[in-house]
Picture 1: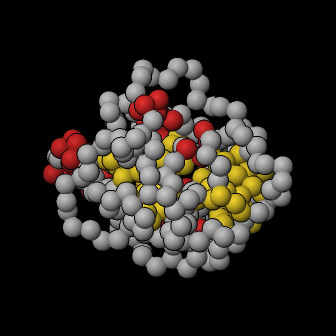
Picture 2 (picture 1 turned 180 degrees about the horizontal axis):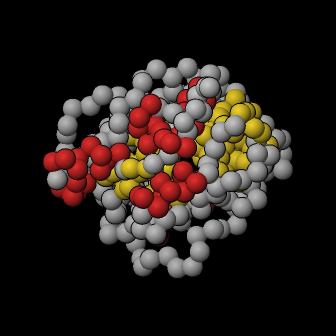
Picture 3 (picture 1 turned 30 degrees about the vertical axis):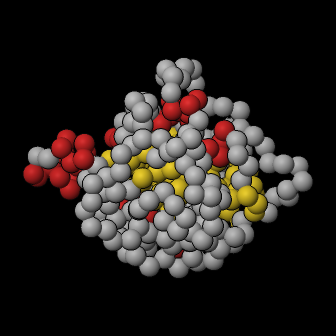
Length: 306
């Protein structure tokens, strides 16, 4: 017995948004209006916990670039070729297990903050990252981060109140059945669809991290996140280990509330092999973070989200 009992029986997937609205036949209308919702979840989080605050229904912000957004980020034709880029390596003077401000580079720009209000200091609550997908419009975060898509925006490369690559409206949230039914920590991941910005999909603007499943437990990974009380992303490189049957662990200091949903990126391949979440909703202390194992469940979820 234990928390993994019946795990495979709970592994049937369904988009959270479709479950919520199929009965009224309004999925298409709601998606267009940015009103698809994720299942409600427990608000308290011991360590990394930051969740979107309760909101009244308001018109979603227009998915337009921020003033001064680089033209290269939001204009031009679709990207061609694979999106797996050679990932940068940690600066040689930063030892393993040390957390620093993330450099502004191609990899860090795919990581961003989730906002429940204006793109301004104090309004971001979790972290997400762009992933490679057929529709080129998906981002990845922790399932415990969201209580709904309405009014939620993603700001990649956010720094000091600026949105250099625009704001992207979340239109749908997809979670695995184990999370939907009982908040299984082994399925604490969510895929979010975002609307085009200036006629362009987010992956065409920034590229996307390929999803990595069944990665070895011992992997050197870069961990990214946006602490809730700061306005710059942080990064730490260290070797991951196995916490239990379905949980990955990494020891990196100073990953507090707000970093939930931040990606574990395989330093050798650039694949995202986890997100801060899972056990203790990511960790009871700021110095150790966890992720649910990425196996066939997250791969099937990506296929369902398209």
